[in-house]
Length: 79
Image 1 (cartoon, one colour):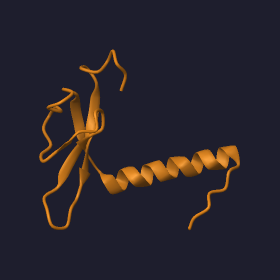
Image 2 (cartoon, helix red, strand yellow):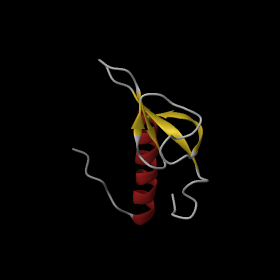
Image 3 (tube, one colour):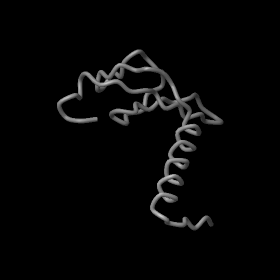
Protein backbone atom coordinates (compact mmCIF):
# COMPACT_ATOMS: atom_id res chain seq x y z
CA UNK A 1 0.00 0.00 0.00
CA UNK A 2 2.45 2.81 0.69
CA UNK A 3 1.87 6.16 2.24
CA UNK A 4 2.54 8.28 -0.83
CA UNK A 5 0.39 6.21 -3.20
CA UNK A 6 -2.54 5.88 -0.79
CA UNK A 7 -5.14 7.79 -2.79
CA UNK A 8 -4.03 6.63 -6.28
CA UNK A 9 -3.67 2.90 -5.67
CA UNK A 10 -5.53 0.01 -7.25
CA UNK A 11 -6.87 -3.02 -5.42
CA UNK A 12 -9.58 -5.63 -5.52
CA UNK A 13 -12.51 -6.75 -3.40
CA UNK A 14 -12.14 -9.93 -1.32
CA UNK A 15 -15.59 -11.52 -1.07
CA UNK A 16 -16.48 -13.45 2.09
CA UNK A 17 -19.52 -15.67 1.72
CA UNK A 18 -21.67 -16.27 4.80
CA UNK A 19 -24.29 -19.01 5.29
CA UNK A 20 -26.92 -17.00 7.13
CA UNK A 21 -26.17 -13.50 5.89
CA UNK A 22 -25.29 -11.58 2.80
CA UNK A 23 -21.79 -11.52 1.32
CA UNK A 24 -19.30 -8.96 2.60
CA UNK A 25 -16.51 -7.36 0.62
CA UNK A 26 -13.12 -6.38 2.06
CA UNK A 27 -10.83 -3.83 0.42
CA UNK A 28 -7.41 -5.32 -0.30
CA UNK A 29 -5.74 -1.95 0.27
CA UNK A 30 -7.18 -0.65 3.55
CA UNK A 31 -8.84 -3.79 4.94
CA UNK A 32 -12.24 -2.16 5.56
CA UNK A 33 -15.31 -4.39 5.06
CA UNK A 34 -18.46 -3.27 3.22
CA UNK A 35 -21.80 -4.82 2.22
CA UNK A 36 -21.43 -4.10 -1.51
CA UNK A 37 -18.63 -3.92 -4.05
CA UNK A 38 -18.35 -0.53 -5.75
CA UNK A 39 -15.94 0.76 -8.39
CA UNK A 40 -13.79 2.39 -5.71
CA UNK A 41 -13.36 1.93 -1.98
CA UNK A 42 -15.41 4.49 -0.03
CA UNK A 43 -12.72 4.76 2.66
CA UNK A 44 -9.36 4.90 0.85
CA UNK A 45 -10.63 5.77 -2.67
CA UNK A 46 -8.63 2.96 -4.32
CA UNK A 47 -9.81 1.96 -7.79
CA UNK A 48 -11.06 -1.62 -7.73
CA UNK A 49 -10.06 -4.04 -10.47
CA UNK A 50 -12.47 -6.83 -9.56
CA UNK A 51 -13.58 -9.35 -6.96
CA UNK A 52 -11.76 -12.41 -5.65
CA UNK A 53 -13.16 -15.04 -3.28
CA UNK A 54 -11.54 -15.43 0.12
CA UNK A 55 -11.03 -19.15 -0.60
CA UNK A 56 -9.05 -18.35 -3.76
CA UNK A 57 -6.93 -15.86 -1.84
CA UNK A 58 -6.22 -18.43 0.87
CA UNK A 59 -5.14 -21.03 -1.71
CA UNK A 60 -2.84 -18.52 -3.45
CA UNK A 61 -1.18 -17.60 -0.16
CA UNK A 62 -0.73 -21.25 0.78
CA UNK A 63 0.81 -22.07 -2.61
CA UNK A 64 3.21 -19.15 -2.24
CA UNK A 65 4.15 -20.31 1.26
CA UNK A 66 4.85 -23.84 -0.02
CA UNK A 67 7.06 -22.46 -2.80
CA UNK A 68 9.02 -20.36 -0.33
CA UNK A 69 9.38 -23.32 2.03
CA UNK A 70 10.79 -25.47 -0.80
CA UNK A 71 13.23 -22.70 -1.68
CA UNK A 72 14.38 -22.30 1.94
CA UNK A 73 14.31 -26.03 2.71
CA UNK A 74 11.78 -25.67 5.52
CA UNK A 75 9.24 -28.42 6.17
CA UNK A 76 5.82 -27.32 7.45
CA UNK A 77 4.08 -29.41 10.07
CA UNK A 78 0.48 -30.02 9.01
CA UNK A 79 -1.71 -30.95 11.94
